[in-house]
Amino acid sequence: MTDMNPYGELMLLSGTGNPELSDRIAREMGMQLAEMELTRFADGELDVKIAESVRGHDVFLIQPTCHPVSENLIELFIILDALRRASASRITAVIPYYGYQRKEKKTQPRDPISAKLMANIIELAGANRVICVDLHAEAIQGFFDIPVDALTATKILARRVRERHGHDVVVVSPDTGGALRARRMARLLDAPIAVIDKRRPRDDTVEVVNVIGDVAGLKAVIVDDLISTGSTLVGAAVALREKGATGVDVVVTHGVFTDGALQRLHEAPVDEICVTDTIPFPVGSRSFDDAPKLRILSVAPLIAEAIVRVHEGRSVSELFR
Ligand code: R5P
Image (cartoon, rainbow, N blue to C red; front, top):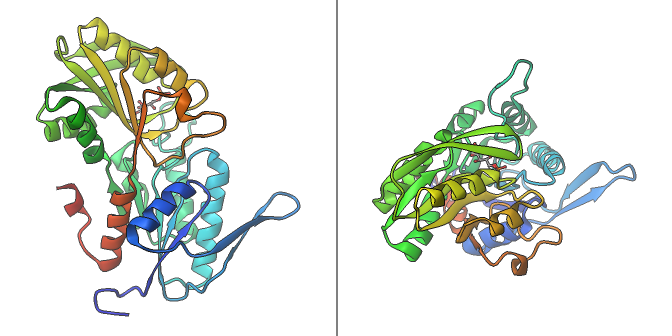
């Protein structure tokens, strides 16, 4: 243990949520993932055996809580519990995609606030801090009573926009809730912004009420936190083309892609769909051949750098300046 490292040696572990991303992060850091065996009891319940001692170590457990959400969550809770009981000196839950984040407030009477419930259980299970990427609402940070380093992929996505179009774009938020996100991207690109006023009568249907801002004659870049059914982005792309945008790219941090979403986006007036690797792809039968418009950028260097900085007690916010 050194003065720079009051938490003991750094250790990296991975759940099964996104093993490819965990490998990429480990490679960026020039480290190996610690060995861990996940097994099932006869009735399907999960068990974990961490093969090496974690006593006194500064442990980072990488586990996005993406599809299958309940499985990935329970895995996260159980591994955290094992690490806590094995006397790790500090445990950081690295959650590149935070499941249930869209349920962060009550919108109707008798609604749950599932994002808060998940935060409670993550803390209770043993996490001492959290690293995550592009939360749906920044207020989710406050659902935890432990430090949260809320990273953002905005710079990574902005670099791609600059590569394709220079600064000659209008950055569009597909709903009023994402205006701040769009403004951040626009600032990096020195570009104007537009905001779409949308209504969502059903989970898989979106109605565009209005496009606020000037998009005619410009390449539009829609920025969002996640793509689930794709309805938001398809509705936005159609509305932008109708208002005279000369092309539409979408840049999004989390590619949740429920069934049919990628196809829907490929059939829409969208030129490129750029997501990061917080969630694994391809899933099931989907492959890159079915998705020629899709481009995936890695957040592994960003997360690796954040882990090193947290471990060494250095500023993480410097990463965004
Ligand atoms: C909404 O507030 C979010 O930021 C996303 O725009 C939305 O969740 C995307 O969902 P879908 O792809 O199903 O329209």
